[in-house]
Length: 206
Image (cartoon, rainbow, N blue to C red; front, side):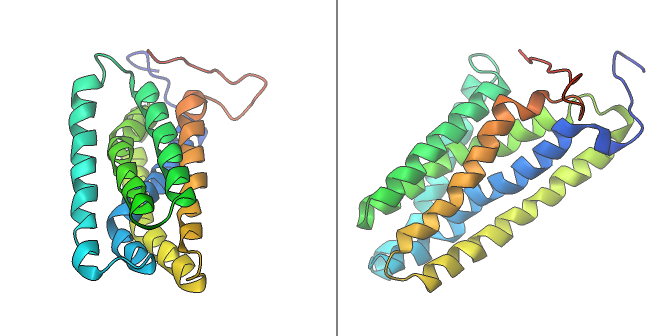
């Protein structure tokens, strides 16, 4: 123990880090799908390519607003875990709205998910990397590898559209479990200090 940080023997003794790695992997889906999958989704809903090609740019605008909002709100008005909770909840609501609507309305709700998705990477990283001591470099590497989710999930999203062209909105449901896991991490997982539930120390971060 040094500087108030307990150095555990293995990186796998930090359950909140491993939960964070999974959450970051899934948050990459929440970020990648509205960027890389939005044009294919728009085309499946009958939107002309001349219009659909602009939607990626709109998503990036939504993400930029999310980044700017996070710099203003965190940590002065919102802690990292509270901001992550709100982003996950907003993502769930916008995803459901995208699913239950059709046409351009469904597309714009999917674009709006970019606002909250923009905040997830930094907040999950911050909550996962704390107090790792000598394992900080290894933990950082594990978190960095989570970025592959941004390449995997848009492909799955596109495949789901291809196999069900009559109801392409069903592909949007792929985001639901991703946001739910992120919400669970922001509510409980980031505080999980030990695998032993009977003696786990849940540390409330301010």
